[in-house]
Length: 80
Image (cartoon, rainbow, N blue to C red):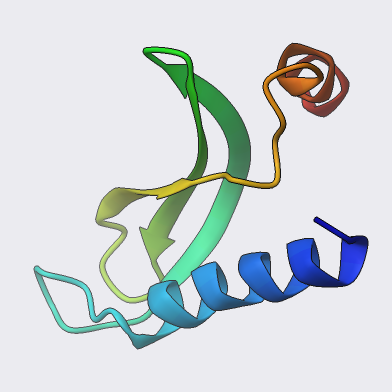
């Protein structure tokens, strides 16, 4: 996967977040933290968000195919 592919993938994650209304008040979510987590060996991009209107906290999880198994732990270390 090229860097351009990775950026398109991440842009699509933000699109999902931006189009998802807060389940409490209908407001917009703002991304506060990004992390890559392995769940049963599968990498996930976790976006912790907060509603700009009411402060409700929600985490979005997306598969992260751009993290290859060989270097997945190295990427996680660099992000933390």
